[in-house]
Length: 472
View 1 (cartoon, rainbow, N blue to C red):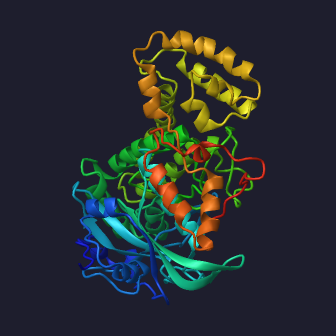
View 2 (tube, helix red, strand yellow):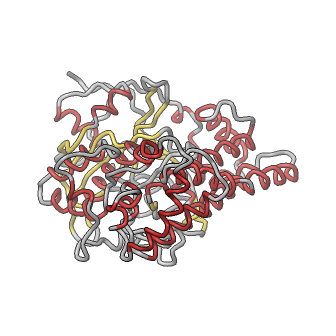
View 3 (cartoon, helix red, strand yellow):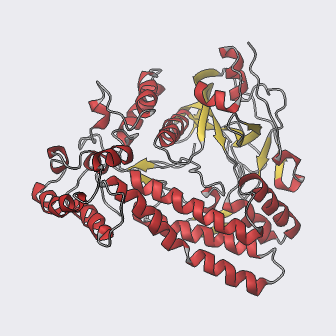
């Protein structure tokens, strides 16, 4: 059987100013680590022999119909504008239209230098490739919009980071790689024809019912509001919410120093480069609004009536915090078993979170166990839980089936940071069993599974991972 990918490429038909044509740089000895057969079926990808897939997903050979390009974009990084970024270590092979009718990008990440590499080597080392594979697939299983992983390949080459590391390439799948920064680069350069073309393309590809640039802004606000609320509901911290990491399609993209919280605290930061806490857990809704405001600023540049556009965009962006709050409340009501809306619900939820923060309660395990002794055991002072649960139990008396609601809203399993790091260390030593086990368990996060208690446990003091690192 031969690997076949039914490419139907649209972005490569846009003007050359949108990208640089760039083939992947071959590697020495590719070896297939993982292939996502379930996702491949959705993409209509027919797998080939293992060696053939290793060559293709490492970038040594190009499947028929591929048109590899590196995409151009700019972006605000930690609030500072960088006028040109772009795919510095990735190439978009092309697009497919899946069995569900959705168009998706297939991209190789870590495939060598491009014109946008900014003196980088364009490569990835094994650890971040496996982290993105595991976490992105876990996020998908959790029901959160996300890029996905189709394949991972060892390169047989060494990548120099803080030391010599084994190289790898990830095959990433996304509804598109259009970012806020993709719009920013053309707006900042005054290339209004390109900006208009990009806007039309984004609407046609993602939101065909959107009415012009401001219509696009409205639907992106809605998509981002739902996405951030979903992150908050599982304790996810992105770590680098720069505008070049903000997807127009409303997907989680660019898993760098990401993590899911163990013990709850609103100011939790894992990213080693986020020294001021700009992208802390509790700041993510505000940053999403800030990012969308940058999109609004870019979109306005193409409008003939700038004053009217500013007024409309301001109204749209100013409405976003309320949309975020509404999405957040819907998520967290479900997490405590509530389907009906009552006036005191926000205070009930906030009171629980405050008590969790004060008592170092594990985020995932507390919500999963609500109503049982296992929940109060998460608190350093169990009386704090008991006091809260009195009001909660009274509120639950007005609900029909809270247990079913909570089971569907609260996962038993998340990709805990210490387990991901342990998995990476094992893989570096050539043992992929922990990687395979994590993927298998995390594919069913809402189900109780036997012989998996170790994956539910928070880290011990010696296992805590205090910082994760950016990039591949």
